[in-house]
Length: 275
Image 1 (cartoon, rainbow, N blue to C red):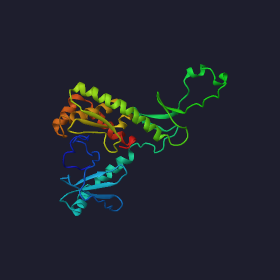
Image 2: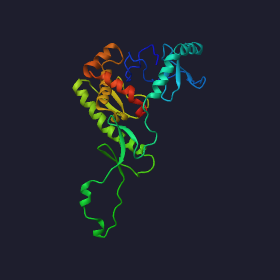
Image 3: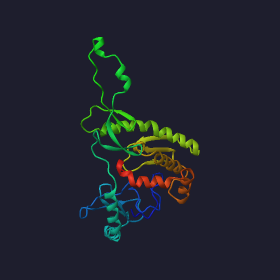
Image 4: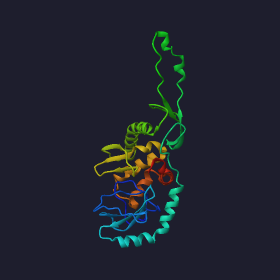
């Protein structure tokens, strides 16, 4: 993305040195989308100070026009950065993508690894329990379960798309794990947090507000621990610096020296969870 001004405060963004940054959604004035040759959409933003070019996950290029800008200048800006756009499209094609439908045998991102969905076998101890028939009762049907590595999840059945059920399980775990980890890291770093929420963000890993609320994407439970912790540290440091200035990144460096590795992982693998 060609963005000539700092990102919105309080929202996780890649560092200024990155060549292409994550898409940012903003309040718009007179929003309109005008496709050009099936690939360019023009949008006017009340907050943009310069022309900007981004590439969405679906391959659509978006040219953002400042409030006082013109579509003619936006077209010129796009043409000036056509080579960057083509390179960005090629990188996007090479990135790994998650399967749309999850079935037994599908590999999904779980705890930072592409893990196969397998049918979970019954625990060994169940085989030693008395059979219900011995007490004149009909045997209870086994409840379907699948596993991702060592984690077992109950599903309604083995056929069909398992994704909605498994993502619901992931969300429940995230609502327990992510706030707990945030409070722990807040205590370590000495940052005061008022509230932690877990949400279903589609374009952000996390965000925070000046009143001390941190919001995290539930998909962080699918990432490696060092990525999860980096995003939490990132938002915690926003409570000290509500911007993406050099001073902000220096604070991130102090509490999370491995943040560059985490950013690189996000850039390579974010598409596996649709981000």
